Length: 135
Image: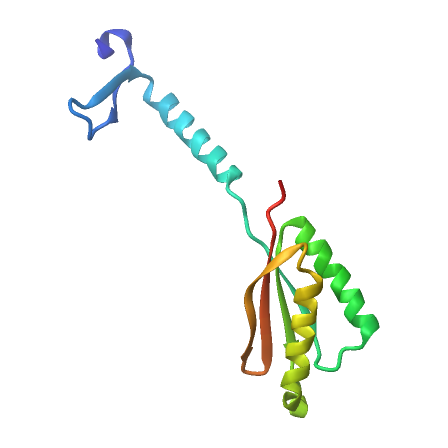
């Protein structure tokens, strides 16, 4: 029947009993399939991670400035990676760095939730904040 119409016999679902086949143009079928896959890929959300860097002795003005940027990133729907970088001997102020990150987390509580609490990795203390889902 397919040859009479100048079309192809395409197996749609090979695992079904009996297998499902359709008579259609195979090139057009492939084109439609690629189009569907591309549309599905476009709908998938891409997660971007924005970083904000602090020092253990970051001043209030600098902190507020960076906090505003953090708010903007979370409103955009990006994840936030806030970290305190310890240079040289400033590693002795680990507690200051942790307090700074926890303060940031508490002030951004309405925009995002903490995914990972502050954790020291080498010379940097890192914390992740994910945006809250908006309805």
